[in-house]
Image (cartoon, rainbow, N blue to C red; front, side, top):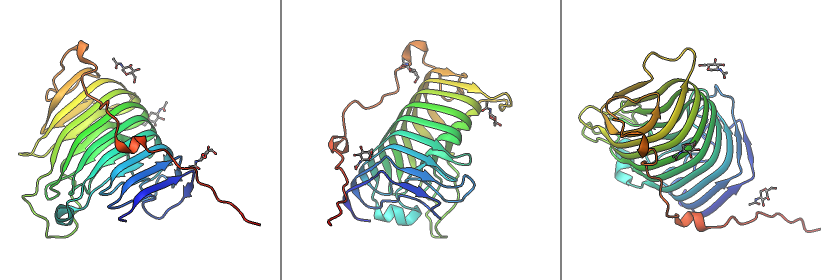
Length: 285
Ligand SMILES: *[C@@H]1O[C@H](CO)[C@@H](O)[C@H](O)[C@H]1NC(C)=O
Ligand SMILES: *[C@@H]1O[C@H](CO)[C@@H](O)[C@H](O)[C@H]1NC(C)=O
Ligand SMILES: *[C@@H]1O[C@H](CO)[C@@H](O)[C@H](O)[C@H]1NC(C)=O
């Protein structure tokens, strides 16, 4: 907690009873080359949880878990709103995830301090419940905005994209029913997925829709026993291009020539220009 310039690299973490790597209220963090192994049926064994952190880079990690491989957080309900410290400027790249009951990348559900500017690239997930999941609900407040995902290779999955606007789970009874989360500017592109039960299950909040959703260049092959409707969408707005199977009506297709329309930032973040320091341990005889 409250740390700056932290590097965690080249470790294997086995059978943690709870979240594995959990930096809170911290900045300038690199987590690289980590293997995390937990039984796939173990509860709450998230891999890496950036929590109210800014400038963080998570790269070249291999995670097998019973919960989300990477779960981005920023405080819970009224406590997160009061503290008001977002997670921002987060890079996730070259992640390999196996998590049959959870997501490769989750945003929330504790997101009350806000989550902004998340850039995920080159994500591989096998036998994982969902690719990217946004979890929030009434009482959370805060925001999840400017999320960019580019390049996912996925195999055997229930939902490639999942947004849940009715995630219950409150810290206590003092949450504010007027604290609505703002979910806006969610960009997904260049995804190939196979053996999928449903392409997307997108559920915003009635009276507080999730907006600015952009999905392009997605090729999703359905499983033999797939659900009848590959997309379900409620209270979400956005656009799509080059998406198979054809998306829901709330995400109208802009035509095949727009497959590069969902932006991925080309500027680099400050954390990207920080070089890893070599860890050394010298024995003095
Ligand atoms: C579409 O996605 C595939 C797979 O990620 C990628 O190889 C291809 O370059 C993308 N096409 C465009 C037009 O970006
Ligand atoms: C496809 O997914 C189903 C679960 O939906 C799984 O039982 C099956 O083994 C998967 N097939 C392949 C070829 O991975
Ligand atoms: C991690 O291990 C690799 C391979 O042994 C090595 O090249 C690299 O320098 C190590 N990283 C750090 C930060 O020590």
